[in-house]
Image (tube, rainbow, N blue to C red; front, side):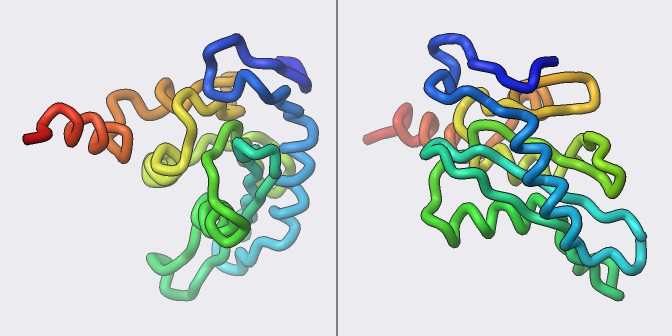
Length: 151
C-alpha cells in the first residue's frame, strides 16, 4: 500500500489524490480525544470529503453501553455540521494507531454518506465501500427504485 494514491479514472474520487498518511494522522489526533473509560479502547476516524476537506471523529462511551457513540457517528455528524458532502476515502485507527475495520452498523452509516466506490483503508488493504458492504441498501437504491417506478 502506498501513502499517496490516485484512483483510476471513473472512480468516485478520481479527482483527488488520497494521502493516507494525512488521513491516519487526522484519525490518530481524533483518537487522542476519545472518551473510552469503560472499554479502554479509544478509536479515531478520518475521511476525505468530495470537496477536499478532511473530517474526523472519535468514540464517546457511556455507562449505559448501548448509548455509546462510535467514532463513525461523530464523523458523520462532523460531515453535516461542516457543510455536508460525500465521503471519498476513510480510515479508522485504534489506541495504538493500528488500522481497524468498522463494524457492520458503521459500514452502513458510511455507505449512506459515501460517494459510489468510496475507498476504505482496512486491515487487508484498500477496499471500496461496495467490497466491505456488498449488496448494500441505501439512498442510491431508493433513488433507482423511484426512477424505475415513476407514474
